[in-house]
Length: 206
Image (cartoon, rainbow, N blue to C red; front, side):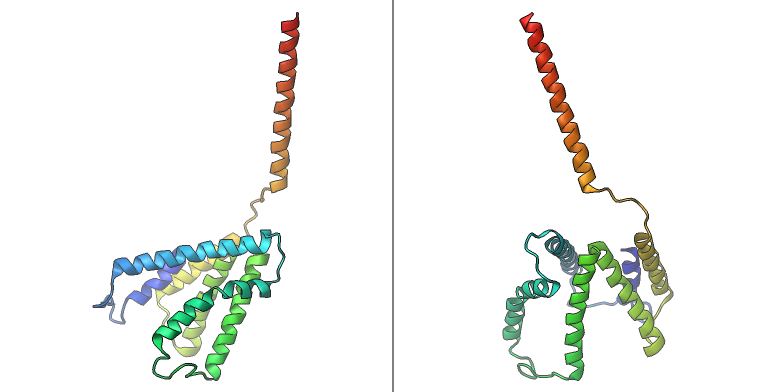
């Protein structure tokens, strides 16, 4: 989180170091919208991980992605109809670059799904953050994009976070082991209760 904040902080400043001022901007509304988007994105990642790993119905990554993508169709169709095709009309403006971007977007969705299936939501988020940092470095060295010292520091923070999570040697508790311990404790308690009950009955009989 710190790396993302440091990296994004440069977007709120101009080349002269002055804060960007927008007459139509609403800081409170924008912050609320971003927090809502981040929260929903986190819940979506966790829910997708649950569906992929814990659901009794086994579907492939392709089928799950297609199933979840169907829910976005009505929303996008409403936006398209409301915009009325824009200046170029429906389906206008398609080029080879646009087709490639669509293909890469679909491939990226499959990669995200695979990272969640064989990893987890946290690892997926770290991979996404690392890809943003790597893209920015490549943009700077090959296309002359901006790369401020704060952005370099953000890159170091993100790399340390990825290494800290990836190479963490903390043992993970086995749920079945915990379940067995709990069941044995319950069984022991029941046995003790039965013995106490028998002793009480014997004392009453005598």
